[in-house]
Image (cartoon, rainbow, N blue to C red; front, side, top):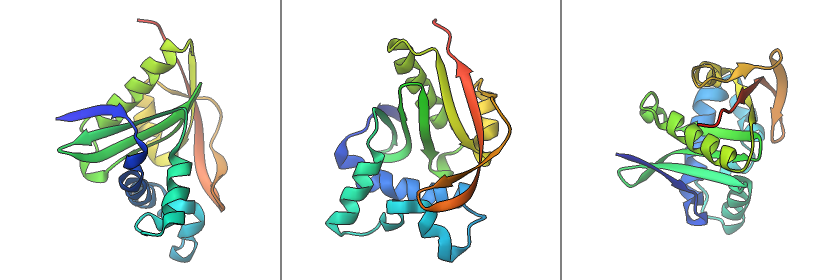
Amino acid sequence: MTTIRRYRESDAPEVGKLIADTYSEFNLSFVPPDELGLFLGPFRHARSQQKLHQQAIAQVIQSAMVYVAEADGEIVGVLRGRKERLGSLFVRGDHHRQGIGRKLVERFEQESLRQGVTIIRVAATLYAVPFYLAMGYKRSTGVRTGWSFEGRGLKIQPMRKVLEKQ
């Protein structure tokens, strides 16, 4: 069974590894190995035990709304966002297509509605576009070239969704 809950700072090491692994595998395959660290920022140190690395990862994860998905005692998904902006969504590859991303996004949308937000924006990676389309998001412009930490050249699709009160 998968549960969605608020992120706790003690989750940072596990969430850091999840982000580093899934981001690399599903979104950064175009990046040469020697440049991967530029795109991962502090997440390149996700397996480091150094306190400074752990603090940097915890700081980057922080956002107004952060939710994790837990299955069998392990964190298998994370969503970060703030008012009107879904910042990032990662679900462990072996848990794709199990409704985890959907549950995380729905929780974020519910909280956004509660706060009076009616439009959510996301800069989706090309890998994630089909997922967001299935969730009711629409492309708001053409594909753009963006960045991730110090890495340049990440293709993104700006998208938006108008939330409806239920």
